[in-house]
Length: 97
Image (cartoon, rainbow, N blue to C red; front, top):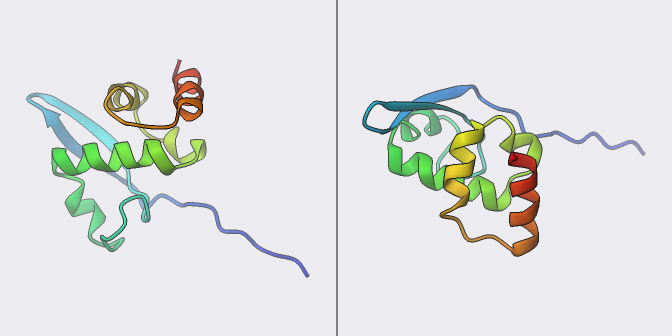
């Protein structure tokens, strides 16, 4: 029997102002945040606090194939504030260097 696996697919991207005058574009992947429906994500990700939580959760849980779609500098900035296992932190720091 042959299995078909579906990999995470982006629903597009959203631009968000994370600080005064600084705008980033993040990909929209359903499932990173636990409760919002896929249709609600683009609207929610226009809030800077939600984008930070979304990115930190992605750093803790998501595979590199998803993380590489995020802006590299934004991931580095959020990695400093997130609590992850030491091995994962080293791997993420290596991949982002």
